Figure (cartoon, one colour):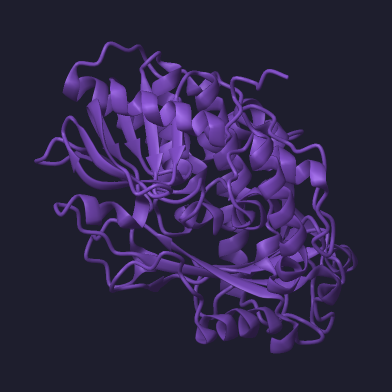
Length: 480
């Protein structure tokens, strides 16, 4: 059977790597997260010849460690950043109505009027929801796609989040945002859509040095050194961007989540929004997920020092999230009920703010003295606009012959596997084979930690690992 033009697999990687080393592309993108794949898609959709290199796997870094929300920027409104909130609402509209409606569903979010939520926080939250709904209307997002905010009584609040403490509960306000089925799946869908337009998507290729007309790189599978020539280079490596451009000053912030069993919270039907004590702009969220899990997050703390390959949550952060959640529950969740925890590093641009929570989430696209363009900051929701701005800058800076971006009307491919993950981490052979034959997975870790999210719970991962390793090896051996 002839592979689909969007299929990513080891055989295509070998062919594309040889071609990348043998010619000159228009745009070389460094970084295989949501920003880098978004840049590759934007450039390829304009007819430019694109090569993307990624040192590890697609969605290896921050992109797989988000809250999996496509949100309208409610928090930005609370801090007065209306421009970022408006941009988020518009990009959410495009994602939910045109670009990826098959990957996103509306998720109710309950702000409970409970003893642990002050009158000031209730008022600010309700006002913010009303302002957010105005932005929804401005973005032309229909109520069918995202219903407007509305009050609920106590009985309804308890049905939405049964673990709430009923004592003193006086109902609450519900608003709606978009929830991704999976953030890593969005990255893979963007990458595969770009590949279908001719982009070369090369994982396990590490950039050693960037310059205005290309990069020196290493194939980490073979150790071979490769020179890739390009008319422009775009650095989209997130928190690692400053390691390739010493003119950048970043201030990484660590966002941690914990993973709970939904059953321990009464199998909630909506997310819970919990204002931090004394704050009207910072929240912890308890977010129901498929597969019987709930994510509770997230922290926003400085993460100075060397950038780790994979960030690790601290025990203090796990304790903070549990303590914040338990303030509103009838029965506290004990530490031993935490099934997993993960952390991602936000690539914030250093503005000199006292705390990372106060650093703007606006993105930045700029050309360095070396001629390399870097794009950083921003949020998962606004990846498309970040990519458009970066490619626009490249077109202007280097005189590339390309039209305007067309990604606002370009639907991503439906990358769903012919089998799925169910509660407890069961995974069909067909889903593993699909990950290897079409989604670019090359190891069991790729499958468990990024093409599925079984790896978020270490016990589930350990049970699935032997069978997945065997199927991956057999499928790779069967490729041309």
